[in-house]
Image: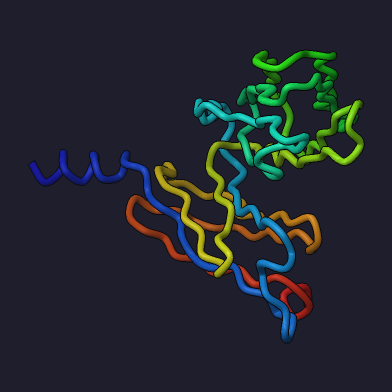
Length: 192
């Protein structure tokens, strides 16, 4: 019985959690926009499968920042009483949905990891950013820096961070079947 229980525990996903902190005196993490913490290194991982949306409302995108896994699709419904044309030149995830009216929605599949800048060709003030993580194991750090990535299969990974206004970081980590705690430091001292 003990052998079966140990095998089941080893196959169960673990949780990676921790805190992202800045090594910049007087700076707050929230001042640098969203910080994404994600894992790389496991091939053949399916997309997250969650329903993701980037809505058009009051001539703005909502939310203004979205994180998805490579392979995920994002619905882009038009909630305004005006036409929109949602597009991106961000290679290799470029797209152009064409003009569509209120009440319609178009969908985009994001096949490649990377940053996607989204715009409306009619309303130059409309913009959003989509971060496409290479796997479904990602989290956006809270304003206080806390993050948690659940259901991670036990294995060795590359832990990476991305923020539009901060340098990226990466390091090797081992995630077990239980809780693995790893704090991440960003900024001047972290890059030495």
